[in-house]
Image (cartoon, rainbow, N blue to C red; front, top):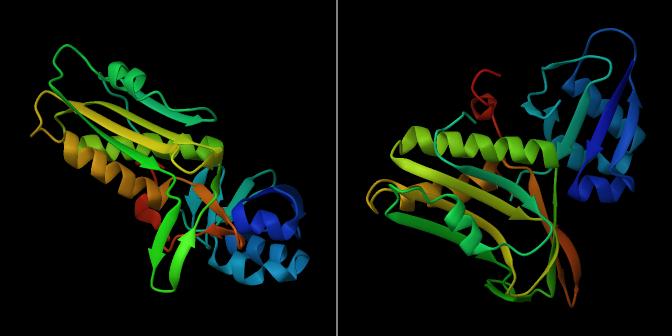
Length: 241
């Protein structure tokens, strides 16, 4: 049987392509079987495939999950919802983020406070090994799954802070230079003590765990994908999945 494979970040670079068709023996198969078949075709990718997060048809999957003909499996490194009566915005943007537009979009007549987290491209990072200089960042995303997981983050925010009103989550993709905005997470509420601060903080932390977006740092000494360490579990699946 055949399955479709999507590769991101380091895995895409090693394979030299972002998408391929993989043929498996007929009969029952699991995500683990797909990993082995992928390594057999791309031996240099073995360590990356073993450490990669897997998704089947745009939802996180464990190694024992069954795979059937025609499924789409995505493999990617660790990443560095319900309906609401209040406004919600989820976007992958290839242009500048308009903070004022988004704040206005999640503000309702009952809103008295909006908390905004805005991430930026940092040009210099002090590390124990020395000063890391960044010329620009390149962001990519597994787009349909990324937006679905943004919705999940918003649903989790609402579960923890039910007085939060509007929520906006916008992630830039493509090449971004030093000083440019990379992401915006904003939460509105009636008062400042009704979860808008906590929701925005939780949103950026959770996004870095489960929303499949990666960045490549490009500097004077070369480039490298920045990979995280969090490995999603069955508990990270959306409710009802």
